[in-house]
Image 1 (cartoon, rainbow, N blue to C red):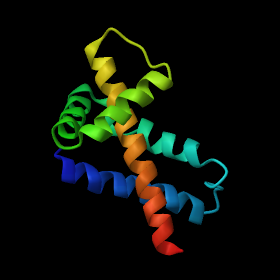
Image 2: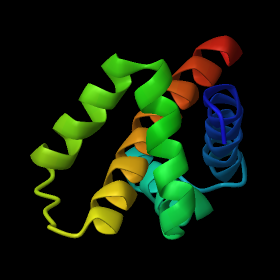
Image 3: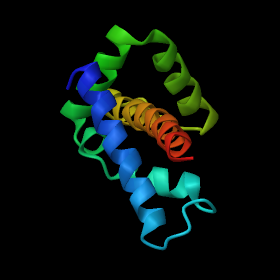
Image 4: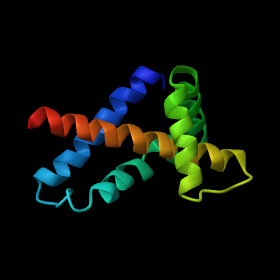
Length: 111
């Protein structure tokens, strides 16, 4: 997946989070949990090859986001010596950051 595709994908994840709230779930209280759920179950995190592609797309196009993902991985104590696991952790961090920003942007647009 390229960077533009990733932006579109995370906008769709953000819409899923917003739809949960509209269906009666209190996403406002569980904002981070809802985002965690949609990101953690993403095929871009689950499958090693897709995780590698996700990290590569961001590394090539958005070094600032890549740095933030690396910091998030450290802050949350995600540790591993296995490269595939590191890539899935980075892919999760990237999706989490991008989806959070997309939810905030979509919420602002509705207000």
